[in-house]
Length: 251
Image (cartoon, rainbow, N blue to C red; front, top):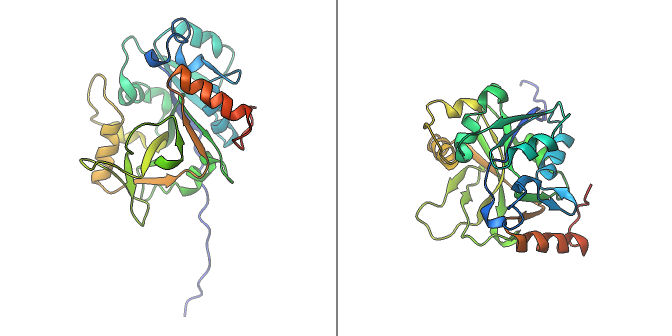
């Protein structure tokens, strides 16, 4: 009988992340009247720096950030940072179009994508590292961080996804509710954008395409998650942090 050996899957290494930063942030007005939403401070730190710091801690070394509204402030914020590449959009391309138009800067390897208005705090193990540990390019083309609807803050929807026993993700479609919402953090393969629509389109179209091939997976976030979309939700999150309800610190 052949000797069986226990093997531990080596965690993936992903060096590039796309940060979606081109939105107008209209719901965050009046804070965004003179400041782009990614630079609105949360506990004294710009929103966009929260995900960048967490991704950098897990080994990401290149950040591609799309810009549009008040882009000169974004240029100033990242001045001198050799790990950040800005991609200006003359016209907003939505989430999917923004990634598509930045692929020449992203490269041909799997990459993270996230936004700056979804703020997560880690559980026992950092969420980015959990994503890397779960990522299996042999069976996955996309991996989503999913958040239990009952454990989210600032979210008022009915959920987005179901997970089966193998962690494959399926959108709720016509069903009224789903147990998980999409938390904004994901890993994608560049080839998914081959044949993508011209002009603006949402990343949801990419997820739908991957779901049809049964290569869309998800992992459940085990920490806290906040959607910071309005001045009110921003203040609520700051109060939660100040009162010590989260395990995170504000480094």
